Length: 310
Image (cartoon, rainbow, N blue to C red; front, side, top):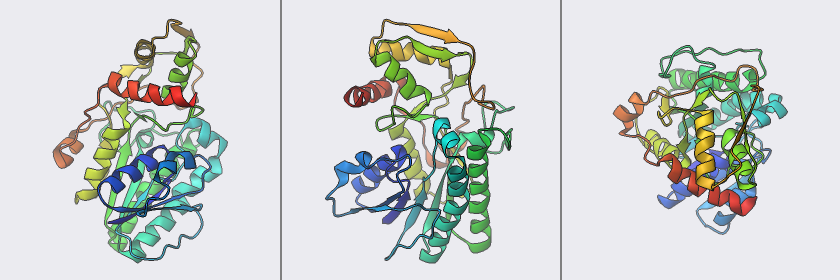
């Protein structure tokens, strides 16, 4: 196949590029680099099956030649990023998705949307199934990301139903691994950076829960979903739920950080979910997928990466 990956210089996009190239496909990675970084794809320079195009996908996308699939992963994804770039986040979810879908229609290519567990908002149903419609604050600070992704899902299904585009939607739950940015603002790089500096890990509240999957598990789920014939959304995440305080203790253990944990009053962004756990029944049944990498194993690989960049 020849595939286009928008957001191809980002954390997830770069790992997807690696996977598709390893499977013998040709990859075009497109990114405007506001949150992506060419360091993530520097190892692919000179690969004849890889092309990088610097472009903002909210502008018209032109790409010569055939395309078999478009994987739309362009978007700020951490709270720090989408609070810094709120308009760009909304535009890439709306205009960027529209442009990518238009290209898929013109090229008769499959279209794969990277959606998010954030479309569930601060959930009133636990764990979250794909048929749960969510509890999102549309005008809160996180709404720019949540609603951009909800709109992108609606637009994707409209193109599927009206234009017959062959579409896929993945709802990604918390994912970590090498190539995350230290200044990402999310809990994994925050905790690992503090632990490597032998500082106490700063936990706000601590009772809120998350579930963490290693990036290779996510990439496997994405690859299987693209190869399937399933059009409705599919959760890809690790159903093992733990509190942030428990997670901090594991990070300290893996790094060997003796400084412990300091607890502060909950200063999370308004609307930040109290719980997050995927129901992956659909992924198990349709894709024969479930996460394989254990938390400590994945964290060890992630810590080694951050040791090199810190």
